[in-house]
Length: 115
View 1 (tube, rainbow, N blue to C red):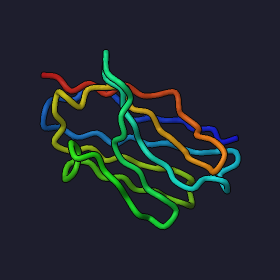
View 2 (cartoon, rainbow, N blue to C red):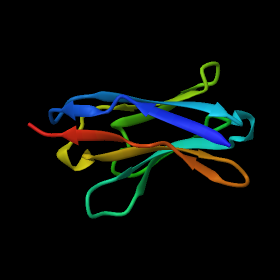
View 3 (cartoon, rainbow, N blue to C red):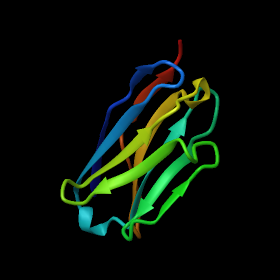
């Protein structure tokens, strides 16, 4: 199994920046891709960004040009740099690791964008 631990959430004003981190442990050799998802109150969980083992990335249209996903393979860590944050980015952000057999999820970290 893969274990994921997120960090870096918090309260930020509109237009501000945050960086989320997700450290993976366990069966990391089985991971094909990692990503970030988010869930706002009363809404379904949605994809934010993903990165595969080749470094190819994919972003939701709503975050393109503002968010950047990256990974440090030496640290088994994935990052989400979030710039120009908007109130509608407020949500619990979850880290995801995808293998052939299953998905692993982190516990989630709250991001609140408010003045």
